[in-house]
Length: 431
Ligand code: NDP
Ligand code: HSE
Image 1 (cartoon, rainbow, N blue to C red):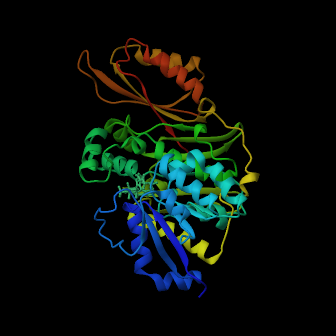
Image 2 (image 1 turned 45 degrees about the vertical axis):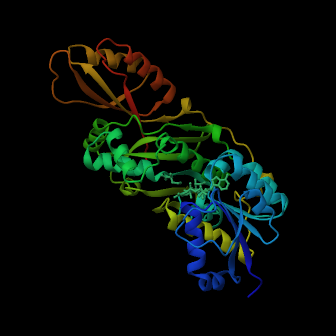
């Protein structure tokens, strides 16, 4: 065996302790697979005395993560602190400045600073590994960058947030509303105390920017992503989706359109028979459509100590073995900005639910607005009859329409006197 690879780990929370456990549980297997012993020499976290359920006394302790990056006994830095700036960013920059490769699970950091960090790392011939940052244990970064590298991609999409997928699955199975399921997920520890990054789609959007860059070889551009979360998805919409043969999933989608690359995160209705509709609970999945390979789908656990450690250590094995690939598939200097197709130009079918007062002429008024916006209705559903003064749901599925026209139509429909609540719209994604 060659000399050991000396590893410094900053951040000893869920993922950091998972990585420590993996590295200490199977040293022989890892050494055999990489040709070097992977040994942790130094660690950093906030609280030195916190009980982490794992022995850390044998490693050099750093209160300051930047100190860990500069430690001469550290060859590679593993950043597992989190956050788009602050100590995580300072640590990665310091590691690269010190000529050390970096492995990180931090999608928030990379979504905002990924291109700059890749440029800095590659200028020094260093790896910046981030397999763990997208879909946890699923090796989708390697798949896009290496296994599928011969393809041009038309679309890459997936379920990238386990918390949202868990909540939507529970809503589907128990017919409860979002708030009730979220509260239960928090009490069970599945959702964070501040769940906003997850349920508002931000976490999935962070991950999507990285998939987009890998698939289309463009700089990471978080500002280009249209982001919508799942707070407004109601039990009623889930029930209608079921009736109509759909499932509602929070999808993150990057696709090539005639106007450029469209990047969006939003609740979508998808065919209930499609393979990704069956990816339930905390599981993640990614579908990549390449011109030669056709459609590929990857699924597995997107979070948790074990799956995420599996991805972090895979990056460490590459570094130990001397296997190196450009961060985003092409050299960072060759990443080319591509035209960005804004959400207003999105074209697709829509599900629209209105709560209307049940009286003659309402549907005619709604249809007139849609006609004026050149939106064609594929089907329309009204069940039951409301008591006088009460609202009854009317559901429509449209043919393909442009988002800008749909937004105008919904604004006008919302102003009709018979429409008693703001219209609900969910995009239908054709898979
Ligand atoms: P945790 O909150 O469990 O752990 C964060 C760690 O960072 C803690 O050990 C904390 O120290 C340490 N830390 C925080 N601030 C500082 C600081 N200023 N200096 C030194 N150390 C600091 O986070 P996770 O393990 O869940 O997540 C880590 C990263 O992995 C994040 O980027 C996250 O997005 C990503 N990730 C997480 C997944 C998961 O399943 N949890 C899945 C995929 C990616 P202390 O313990 O002393 O408070
Ligand atoms: N919070 C994320 C999720 C896990 O719910 O999928 C970390 O990526």
